[in-house]
Amino acid sequence: MINVTQQKFFLAPMAEITTPPFRKCVRKFDQDTVLYSEMLSAAAVKGGAMHNEPFMMKNDNDEPFVYQLLGGDPETMADACIILQERGCSGIDINMGCSAPDIVKKFQGARILSDKKAASEIIKKCRAVTGCSLSVKMRSGFEETDEAYLLEFAKMLEGEGVDYITLHPRHGKLSFRRNADWKLVRFLKENLSIPVAGNGDIVAPEDAVRFMRETGCDAIMIGRGAVSSPWIFHLSRELAETGSCMLEVDLLKSYTDVMNDIAVMLPENLHKSRAHRFSFYYMKNFTFAHDLMKKIRNLDRIEFMIETLEEYIARNPHERVRIFTGGS
Image (cartoon, rainbow, N blue to C red):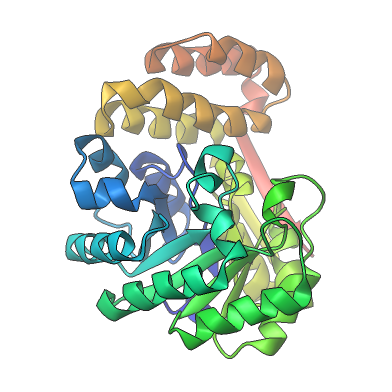
């Protein structure tokens, strides 16, 4: 089970990013972060699709670990919950936030927010078969944000037995445009009895601590900011507990470790996509990130991507190790 108020920091589920190799990197920096899988198709889980196996793979030290499940059919979702529990996990999260066009047209992800009755049936079926934590990651609406409807929807989730809710405070049609409206996180926290986590626009430990204090939310979920800084959870936790934080990071080693693990742990057909996605965010740690990523994007083999950064560091040795600080 997930103890939201104790663990406080969650790694957001991200397609093509929250792979076992990346989670392994995050875990090296913080032992208590709640880790999430990539988004899993309930139909693929239920059907035993072989291509889905790498997405369901767990590291030995992933716990506390949550599988995130995508789908719109209540029976299929419930069957997938049973299968995932048998593999071992601390929780299952229902995706009601993905706004990708190919997802919403199937009545999945953020599209479910438009039909409270359908959402209720999904949660009811999943809750009946799920003994671990059951949560929902959601946006503030599908086509618009209406506070009254948002609260009505969240109260329905609470009533159906969801253990906690993570709110990304943008509606589905916005994707990642405009700033996340964290007042909505505070609004839910003040009106629900179950824990509420907030997610969106966190790029530094100061953001995480400030949003937690301003909203009173029980936990902070970090997505894109954690890909460029897998150590952000360690810094955020230290800052929240002591008022300051500091960590020395070997940027080349962390990158090399993730990339080598991708090569070893994932099937070859996933190497390029996962390596490129991780690199896109991680290269932001370097002065000439655009030039680095331009070179990496043209490479197919992981060893050549690693060599590209090694050559860059050889020319710019002062960029290999950085000390990250925050607070007083």
